[in-house]
Length: 387
Image (tube, rainbow, N blue to C red; front, side):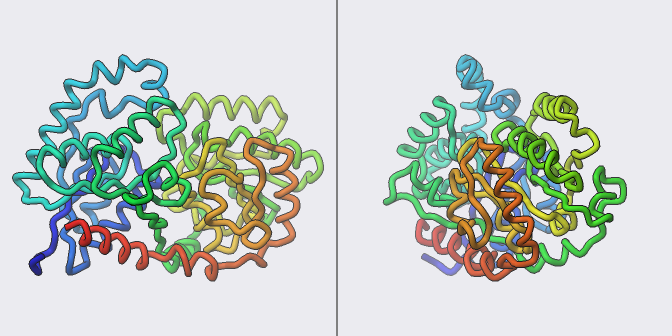
């Protein structure tokens, strides 16, 4: 191995900024400052990741030619596999185009960040003769997605980085390394000191210092906002002073689910007790003022960024015991874990945690396991080991 920086192409197809993209941006910024790795991002130019990466001085290339194949949602593909078949010619062209980028750019490896990019980038890497590293952040529950990911994992990557043990359990241990997402905890603390959004729905409740229970994340069926509202209904009858916030937007074409939630609020008579904030660029000032944060996915949670962020802010947490939640939350210490899809247990957990505001492990617990630098060091080590 010579002393030059290894050149790695990072591929992410998503046009919106989800948790996977937030983590990837942290990785790119950190590696760009290193002496070992020269990172280049390939992403859609209309996406926020592309824009934010350019603003941070990173080298970015446009990946906007995916057409229909990249916009097909997993649930749609599961319902109609012909969508996948009809997209194969375009997918083959994308693989060829990515392989040309790899060869012409003199890249040593391709590093993929999303399920579709794992397959397209993995095939392109094999075609170009470079190393393939998957950073796997999903636990697919649909049969077709699960089959594609597991067959692809057997054939394509030289190494799989999994964001949790729950994710790693899908793959052969000999080819998989668990590296937890890392966070700039000082930055979280600083951003939490910023003012609340001026026109945010529900802001008066926070200003009045009412007990506000919140759920944070993309509005999506698998995130369980409907379960949160069922628990809110149970709590509202016993605690008239309580209010409830749904913090986040419908990022992945799930506006119909958002409308369903609004109908649920009206049907339960909670219109004056529940507010939808929509997407917030900086949710930390809101999170810091919550009496309890709820995280209640109904499908396995691959990691759960909001859990670490809540711990860093000292906010009591009630989380569904599913996926990686147990790897982050120590039940009865950092928060309370409850069965998934159980609003009664969720409501009991919230009541139990109300009294613990300010007594949870602020900063100490996540800092030792989820800080940014250990993640960057571990990823650098994995990359160099492959090259």
